[in-house]
Length: 463
Image (cartoon, rainbow, N blue to C red; front, top):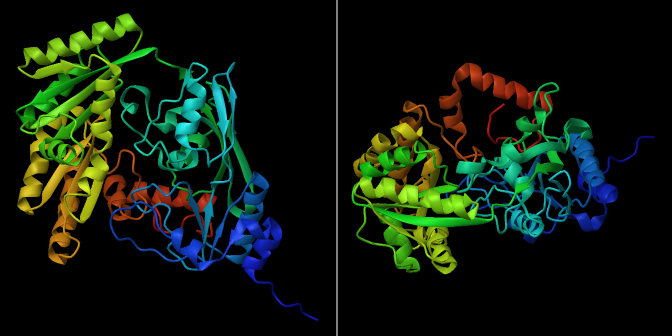
């Protein structure tokens, strides 16, 4: 006599425990969104699963692979390209918020962290013992290590210290059929075989589910200094960046704000920035006290000789005020228009002087309000087109403008993304960057790890 086939969600509840599998409509709807500012393809999932240990992840992948259930991994939901958004109502969202433990190995200068660890919590803990985890995405106060690894997160400090990929020494992950892979070790040199560790970083949950990672730590810089440079010409910004980066000074951060960004943040929460300026740079150097003093003086001298006004923050309160203004840009832009498309393109630094005015030309062509800011020291610019959501024609103009922005970046040998990832919103542009042969390789890698296309299907590459 044949038995009645058990419901897949009931199988999950039995295997994991009912408190880890939530099928309530409230939770399912809450976890159907992330922070993506534009409408994207999305569905309400059939359940939200909250694993608490690696064994839970193994069981849920085993069942999902047997039952052909799509799996949508989620960190804090702070991504901006739809990477954590479920796109199939049969699927489940896997939230790692309960897997939030980490262990510091001070002697080896490493930390082993579960995916749900909040980035700021880890940074504060290692800094208390004199160590440093540099990657600092703007969402660091609530984004998670798992999400940072999935997106290969960046941030202002990544100019000097590198993005998340540079700090992941090894991972444990669950791939097809519930198989567990472990790559790397808490060591700095390891050239055995293909670098699967780095392949997972930036894979946006499309290859498997991360259960832990070994992260590299470095000594905490003892001091820092910040300078504010004010520009009357947009073209001079690119020239100034090149002059600084070829001077022998290596800033820990080099941030850019254009005129509309300055005005937006001053109208939101005044910080004393010059609203009549064409652009500004925030320049931070860190290290020993003597080195910092020498380097900030060198930067000031370079810019002053170019006719650029420079002021150095004299105390921590002024420094914090400047950086708070930079971090307030996101909410400040929300006050300008109801809709926003925020793209994080990358240019080689040598082309910035040419590219910045061309971005303005695109905005003018489509009659759009555009705000540009970002990590200009490594060529990573955040180009924001603002529009009225109620005006479909204006929204369509913004979408066409974005296509031209990506074309511009690629024409200068740049990239369609420096830290936000591909997700849903940039899928079609990935083929532009990689070409057909490269794109086929990406698809092949995806299918090797996930032949049923159940891990975050529809994201990054289409299979």
